[in-house]
Amino acid sequence: MLFAVICLIIVVSLVSSEETLQPNIVFIVADDLGWDDVSFHGSDNILTPNIDVLAYEGVILNQYYTDTEGTASRSAFFTGKYAMRLGTQGISISAAEDRGIPITELLLPSYLQKLGYSTHLVGKWNVGESREHYLPTYRGFDSFYGFVGRSVDYLTYNLIENCNGADYYGLDLFENREPVFDQTGHLTEILTDQAIRIIRDHNTSVPLYLHISHAAPHAGGGFVNLQPPLDSIEANGYIAHSARRLYAGLVTSLDKSIGHILSMLAEREILDNTIIVFVSDNGAAPIGPSQNFGSNLPLRGVKGSPWEGAARGVAFLWHSSISSKIHDGLFHVTDWLPTLVNVAGGNIPENIDGVNQWDTINSDERPKRLDVLITIDDLNGWAAFREGDFKIIIGNVNRNFSGYYSKELKVLRNTIPSYENMLLECDANRIIRETLDLVLDVDLAFAKRKELSMTYINENEINTEPCVPTQAKGCLYNITADPTESNDLWNNLPDLVRHLTLRLRTLWADMVPRRQPQLDPKANPSFHNYIWYPWVENDEVVLEPPKVPTFPLQVSVDELEYLVDINMNTFRDNLNLYIKDMSKSFIRSVSALFSL
Ligand SMILES: *[C@@H]1O[C@H](CO)[C@@H](O)[C@H](O)[C@H]1NC(C)=O
Ligand SMILES: *[C@@H]1O[C@H](CO)[C@@H](O)[C@H](O)[C@H]1NC(C)=O
Ligand SMILES: *[C@@H]1O[C@H](CO)[C@@H](O)[C@H](O)[C@H]1NC(C)=O
Image (cartoon, rainbow, N blue to C red; front, side, top):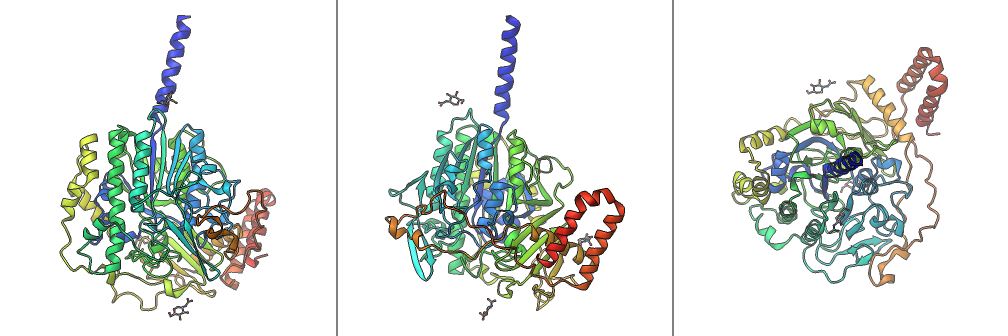
């Protein structure tokens, strides 16, 4: 009897100690934040001391790829799958469009919920809002406070959608399923207060997954583009360009928010066992639709293009027990799902594109990911893929979004405040020092900052006509040597071009294609008291995807010979395998080649 009791006690204490080992996860997403718009990347323009302190004390992911648009990146994050497998690639879901992550997919919050986590979304959703079962509380979140569309006005919380020539507008701020009418103030501060409330009310004997998905620094997406809190405009008074100063204000308020969230984690005494991730969903839009005057320099292109400026994102992970470092291996937005499910103690699902990167974050193991599909956009007709050092881009890419932007936005009219003082005096530094006894090593931080700064392109050296892909020829870069995509190697490395083209053709053939956005007049919030409610019944049939469009690069004779050649070699090498597997792959490659 006594033995049984002792056993029971041991079992109980093991179970509970295992439970306490599950870390809390606070995952913070910035919207359309440029590579150049956090100061830890080296820019002396917008200063982000709270973000930077956590980055310097954490693991900086220096080759972190997102997709190139919000819906695509967010759906890849939540499912661990490339967006093109879900039909969520390309331009983001419009509020009047009946589209969402297919309900057959299980999302990260559902996995964590099953592992005992309390799961909360604060802020942006934008992966489906036309049907009730697309909404966050139907997809694994215990609670939701935020907006379901792609962007809202920071002060009225209205979303405005131009639908077939008319402006549809209505409230897009909800608490779970209920519209929020009684709110005033700036959206970034409202979302921060909600996140703080969740941490304050959280039962700390249960692990917490809090996903904070800010609107900032996205353009307001309505009648007014940039609406920072007033005090954060003043803080950026040294920036000469007025739109840039407003954008900087949005970033400053985001940076402050992180200090406030840390403060509540410390007050609840859970900071030491909380993983904090900070990422951008994709690059900034210095020009074009949803222009926010952010900067991706020295990276090329804008949000929504296949260039690095769209897809190479700001990212780091912090936890009190992890040694700080810069991680230079490839990391993709789909990797969060397996990585976080793994640290939460769960089994990693099969048939995903994400790779569990916990070991690469936690120790110095070799990179786990060797390649990444950066984007497939079948409506625009382009694609980009990276393997090792090299990136290939093919298709009909719009030259108008393929340049280097925002240099003129960064002009200063006054002396910039002391970065060192800001780092030392910010909330994050104080809280980490007081709570965890971690003292920021300023010299080390500055050395990291220097290492992370990419040399700005020398405008005299840069090709005046940098490569832009067409149907006849793509572009190829060694990104390690040339992160600014200025030195095209397509004609120099034909074997590599053939190999990468074939890989991209095969991925292209795997996609779930999409249609041009069909905006439905029935979505108009004017029918629902000016609130954006779901307007399609759950059981209404989802349209079958269209046929896979033709791969947007012409087949060369060279490439055809290469394809036949490698398949013949495989045939000779392994007859049995060929019959079982390679014949499938051959049919797939040939189908991809001729878009059958
Ligand atoms: C906190 O969660 C634990 C474990 O589920 C539960 O036993 C306890 O009653 C909860 N405390 C409160 C105050 O709800
Ligand atoms: C690019 O910009 C030029 C000048 O503004 C415009 O005339 C042209 O239509 C644009 N091209 C595309 C493909 O958008
Ligand atoms: C790409 O560039 C890097 C940096 O210059 C170089 O070390 C590497 O060898 C290049 N990769 C290949 C495969 O040529």
